Image (cartoon, rainbow, N blue to C red; front, top):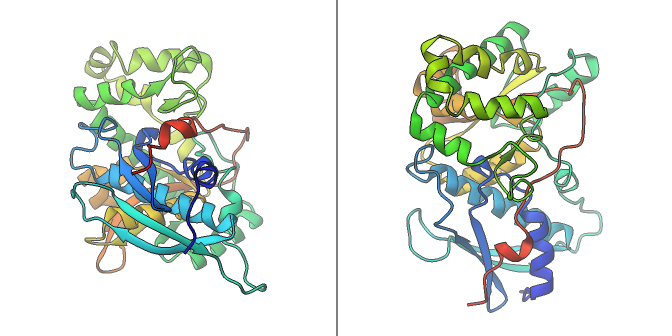
Length: 329
């Protein structure tokens, strides 16, 4: 075993914090305990309307854990012992003991580790799929047993429209809508614009669109919905439907969300999620009927995948490393 020192922990957390979390609330905290790393939960970061059971928060902890594993690998280390607490248990979520990585000089590093810094969600439009894109999708499907790829253009558009219906279903719930807008950072003047939540750049919103989103999802939503306009003004099918593929991310029924989160992060490196499709029972059932999953599997999320039409660098709004590290036990 190798005792993790504070300086190394800071370097590991700087990379692990790039893992995705629901609404980018970043609920995971870490500390040291006799050279091991403790993963802890910040109870102040919750989504009681969107995630009342805490499933998505625990999945987010799992994504952070996988980010930590990738960071350890880049540092020449590996997880030697992992002790995970059951869902709902008091105390740390997990305890990680590190050790030196493989001594085999021919062993290749985890190929996903090099993509962590560049990972981003793309919510804009996509270019039409060409042979290169189709070949890449085929390779992805062959390498990821928990992704069911949908590439037929009409089926992709149908899923995009279903996502709009699912999104509108949740937006009609006032508590859900209020919680969402609480975590949206629609102006660079917002004090947490670069720290957490969903900023305009991450949602592919220009300045005018961001201003409009604040009105549409805020005071104007009830009126727009009564007029039948809420759906059209919040729709994303025009962009999402241009994706080269929709990938249905599925995992074993009954799996610990912490384990799901680790696999989710690895799958996220290849696409952009549309989680409302899995969250709304009607959409979930419709997708499973149209695109049957293997027996014993559950739909967790849907990724839209393709080549961005107008690619641009999207930064990561993240809390500073110091805010994520708690004093040693």
